Structure formats: structure tokens, C-alpha cells
Image (cartoon, rainbow, N blue to C red; front, side):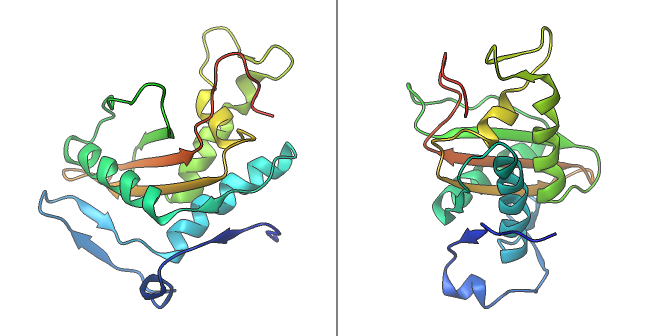
Length: 178
């Protein structure tokens, strides 16, 4: 497959690490995937593929949002479960969170959010009764321009937690995503 609209901005020292795979352990004992071009590309391509399907402009990568996502993913990785995050009101950033069994890369994580598309009714701008689709609508939200994501392997298991932060935030009540 080809990706026409994939772009991201990373500091030069990270670009120099292209192709290197390595893991670090932070002071909480959580395995951390070091920020890499590969990780950014996995998340970004999967997001932009979904956006292209509905005619929405591609996103670009924001390293500062990646840092924020990494901080929260680290917290989630300690207990290996999703926990609510206190938000500013109204929220400035959008966010999707993920927990999954085993190792899941950025494409698989994003794919889980995009799979909610089956429950989104664009004409009604609503999820099917009893279903959740707001992670999908954030992925394709037409005014969102940048994202930063992080994934972690849980401390006491091989499960994956991941967080993506978006700016500007999507999922504005009463407004369709595209």
C-alpha cells in the first residue's frame, strides 16, 4: 500500500534512530517503547488511512502530544488498566485510550478504534444503540490537525496500553466529525 499523506516532525536525534528498535525501563518498572519514527509512522499511517476513507485531511505528528501521551500511558501501564483522566473544561485536547491483551503495535491499536466505524451512523451523527463509536469519530474528526501517541507494555504482563492525544479536540456535541 502507498501512503500519500504521511508526514511527521521529530527532533533530529530521533530521526537518526530510524530503524533501531530498543526498549527502556522507567523508574516504575514499566517497559517503554522508545519514541521512534516507526511507532509514529504506525499510528499516523493508520489514522490517515481512516481519514482518507472519509475525505478528511491528513494529520501530522506532534512530539509534544507524544510526550503527554507517553506520560499518561506510563501511568496506565503500572496497573495495566484504563483509568479516568481529569480534563480541563472544555477539553483542549482529544484523547483515545486502549488496553489489549498481548503486544499490539500502533497500527493494531488504531485499528481497534477505527473498527468502531461499523457502529457510527453519519446521517444521525450517533452511535448505534448500546454501542460506542467515539474513538472512531475522534480519529476522523475533520478539524483535528495533529496527534501524538504512545504505547506501553504493562509492568506485570505482556498486555498493551496506548494513548493518543489530538489537537484540536474532536467529538464536539451535535457536530458531525466530517
